[in-house]
Image (cartoon, rainbow, N blue to C red; front, top):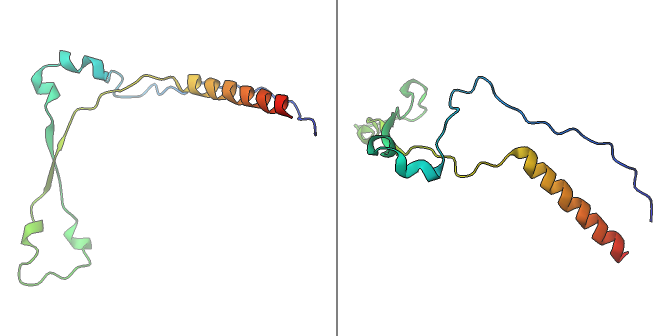
Length: 107
C-alpha cells in the first residue's frame, strides 16, 4: 500500500460579520418569553409582477384575479440551534481520522 503524504495543517478560522444588523435573534427556547405582538406573524404584501415586463396577453379581463398583491403571513424567525462552524469542521476531522485508523487496521 502506498504511503500517504502528511497533509499540512490547515488553519480553520471563524468568519464574523461585524456589520450584521440582526445580532440578537432570539432562540426558540425564548419564544414563550416574547409578548404576543412579537410572536404573531405579520402580513407582508408582495407585488404580483411587473406588468411592463409581462409577456402574456390578457384578454377580456381574465387577469383581474391577479391584480391584487400577494399577501403572506411572515412568522418571526428564531435560531433553532447555536452550533459553531469550527466545531463541525473539527468533528468531521476527528471522524475521518477514526475511519482511516479502522481502514488501516482492516488492511
